[in-house]
Length: 372
Image (cartoon, rainbow, N blue to C red; front, side, top):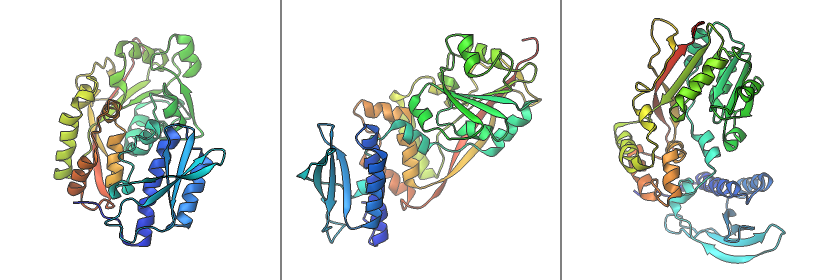
């Protein structure tokens, strides 16, 4: 079933704005477009919905092509070459350069655009449930300091800050930290999960025995576990300090969508996942976790879930941000091609309809004893 351009002025404008933002994201990721220009283009687009603007990278890299069509096609279901492209050097030189052909379906999303990975990751991650952080807060005797290791975009750190006086959130990625969620009680620092020495660890996270809670969300399976656990034992308060690590698996939507999801995950993208991903598939049951239970429930895994209300575009953004999909793309394989997206559309229903998306979660939680 081919996608059709909405027949209302508002619908056409919204669809084209989605496309424009995708192209802007791609150009900004490659250093070709600044935020003021992006803001101007989006503002101009909203003000003049029938003067459509397209941006793209030129081969030279120092030229931005800005296209405008003052006479849009009358039949959007048939015409796809809707943009006349104008070339504009950053110094202001402009001249007509070419016609750009844009498939109609590409106006609805940036699924075929390789966007900034960190920005995509931040936009596409599901939100952890508040009950998880209440559970963690209940498990620790004190609430002075928490350390969120491999924080990514900081969504866990920001929620921890609702329960702890201060949160140190670390990650090795400058790109992730640049898109981290701001919070007055969260301090973001760049650091490896296992720093080079205890001096760096204590300078970044805190003195030995000063941390009430260490968390790792969807990342501990990548770590050198014996080395990381040694770091955790060094910083956790004794007694009462807690380590909590959790993961989530592939989203569940409906039987039809889930069948496509499982095919994409288990077959199409299988060769691009790191073997450590098998620990997530096993709900962390097979991961070494040498810590004492916090209570009678044991160290886990404890199961819960998180839900999101997502459109198809949100759902596919999530998939596009996954490491295996990006690795495949880096190797010239687009696992979310237009044809694949069309099959998801048929299973999903109307693309702008929001559906409840559920992520199964597994949590391990343990403490250090005073003698360990």
